[in-house]
Image (cartoon, rainbow, N blue to C red):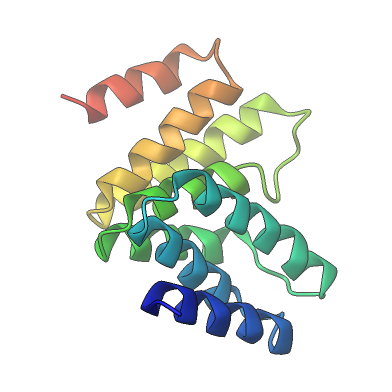
Amino acid sequence: LSPYQDAKKVLNEARKHVPTDPRIWVTAAKLEETQGNERTVEVILARAKDSLAANGVAADRDMWLKEAEQSEKTSFPLVCQAIIKVTIKMGLDESDPKQMKRMWVQDAEAAISRGAIATARAIYNNAVEKLKGKKGLWLRLAQLET
């Protein structure tokens, strides 16, 4: 087996034996990013969210935001973006767009304050995708890019 295949095998075994540790899933996504498997990164993280919930793990949005920022800081931009995409609505009332916008702006601004610009960009990009008509989100995204 190649080192990639070996690592993949070890991570799959780790997930089977410790299904409650989100770091194993994030590490698996990072491994896929190193191989250029962009689509697989998002698939792994979507499965992580579902599997962790099924195993009773209370992986909240703050934990995922920290993982996204850590992924950004360790040069895994696709993992960062996928974490945000998969978890952006976690813990929010989808019937309340004002609450969603408020939380996403708060999350993005907090990320900016910690120097996690790519994380903030991912939050705003996903926010404008979900709330296309919110001018304030578009303006914040544009300001981030200038």
